[in-house]
Length: 137
Image 1: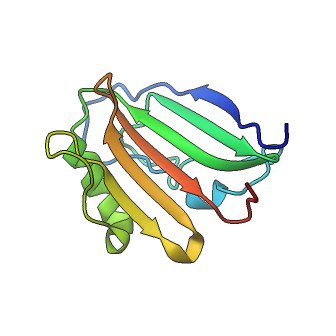
Image 2: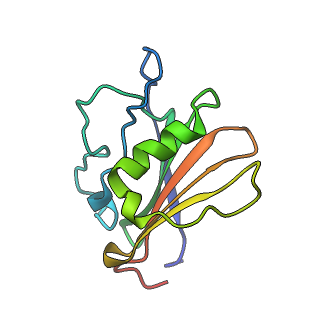
């Protein structure tokens, strides 16, 4: 049972004002944190901007191994990509997948963190932050 992943879903209210190019991005140092610790999910929690409609945490051996944030279908894919590039642009990899539904990928080797962004089958934007640091699968 040690390899069972536990998913905890935290539903967050979506900010009611108009969507802007400002997005709340996940604070990367929560990856690898113990689930019993108090964590701050977003890099700038007081920043105005679009919050995801849902945040899913995946854990392994009591530590956060992945965070999946989901934005609604009316959020522009390229706006989210630009927001991530503003912070992690130097780690951007070539897009993968078909041109009509690309997967954007950023790989931060030093931290052993990967960020993936794509539209799911429900047309929602999913940004997955995952780590392999400190995990023995």
